[in-house]
Image (cartoon, rainbow, N blue to C red; front, side):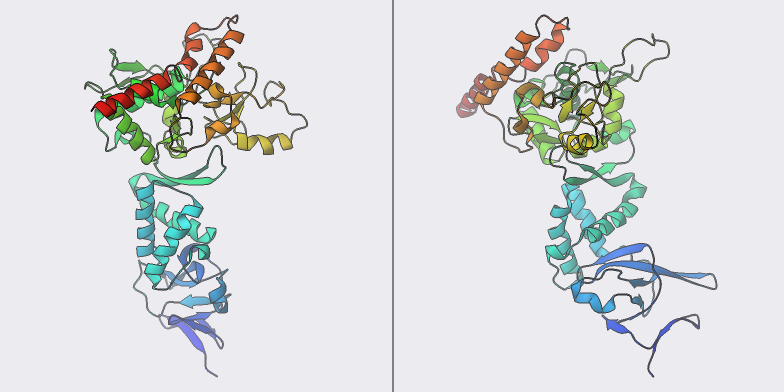
Length: 438
């Protein structure tokens, strides 16, 4: 009776009387393995490394644990390479193409990756692969292979959830946090200095115990184009950062820089014209943000002195929160993403703050809603807000200030939320007139 045999160095590795032949490779029964790659029409393959008399053939055999519909005939079979050169099976041109596509976009979701992988697999295998043929298992296999390839360069593909939609976002980030890496960018020193001023405005000026906005309007951002008189700033932990030695940016350059930061995936712009950090930026800058804007404490200082924590984490998912809900008690540090509150309170006996036990109202917000008070204002589109929105925001702020005027708070904090909306429409009209004249 005919049979198929896999041999190496004169030793029989597998022998079967029944087998399947696909693309010139013979499939037979064998055990499982961990290494994986993706075929557009067969599915995700796991690899087997053969060891005989101390000699190793890495990834010389493979199998498809869950083959796609078109390849069901090779289920529970293992393929042995007819000849072996080694080195190219696990990471091939399809992996390189995927990594290049990822780098060009900086961020990807599974849904965005499906048509990309389908096109890559179609070109690589010269056989049509449809987007719906690409599974999450396939996508994760390419992510794993890409991470293995870029790890020597201190790069890594990480994932996080969008703060409002709960969509899982994958981003290419630096895995080191030294200052050289932070400044390794195509932007000029003046642009980096401007970016730092915008971040200071987000996380210091417009991030107070009363209003944790952590976002900035177009008008506010453009106003920061000028270099301050003192070009050095001290962080919460006592260190200093040196700004640019130049003359700042023009208003037009500042607007262009903001647009570029949105296009590169560092900033997001909401429907009402607020700029905030994107999921990618929060992942890559997490350590730097917490070190720069949070007071890490000093052993020489009074232990009873209140610790300043401007960058807070969601109590449920432990990720940085810039959009969500806060405890009604201002001195309490509990914050929750909107998407985390549902699952969190479902397991609680009462809808109370897990730290101070205050009733959780769901009406105390983090993000631009701390000013607008609207649940629908956190949408992440790239359209700027109009003058009517600015006037509404002004009315909200004035009303809040009137209600809290008797409280013993720092006046500087009360003024912070008014700036995002003051004379926004007039200034926009002036900018339009200037553009027409030019």
